[in-house]
Image (cartoon, rainbow, N blue to C red):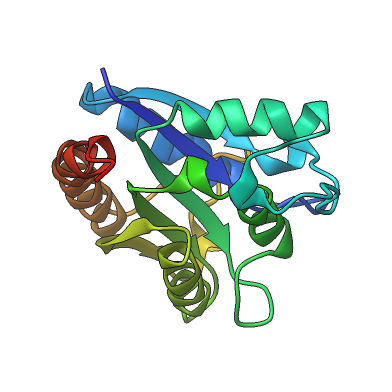
Length: 190
């Protein structure tokens, strides 16, 4: 079964991203299309990029990089869950991306963004542009959640509306298709 890594991008105290990441992880597991793993960058605690060699060389010195490399290498697809900070996605996600290069290549990625009125769409668009530089194919289908705090219960769980649920289904359906197609491209070392 294809492996899907869902990456929760926020790390600050009081963050709400893990609630949304738990929700999309549950939807992905229920679909039965992937072997799903949730990775929380707040728990991973990667330092700022501290490798002396360029990531494209894949000559890692530090154990945290080797573990991160193995985790991303085994993935067939991704879903990034991101809030919007200053009209972009959080810097810990950019740092996590830049630790590696080859491990990201030729894999599809969905994005779940959240925020205020903009629903995190500016963060999602910035992330989409950056993902393509890692040879990741960001999908057109996304889940964009406006005024997300209105969907957080007193028990600190995320309760999506019907629009978010439908968008998640569409994203997962396309992620399955693109994951299958990109495996052919990844296998062609041409």
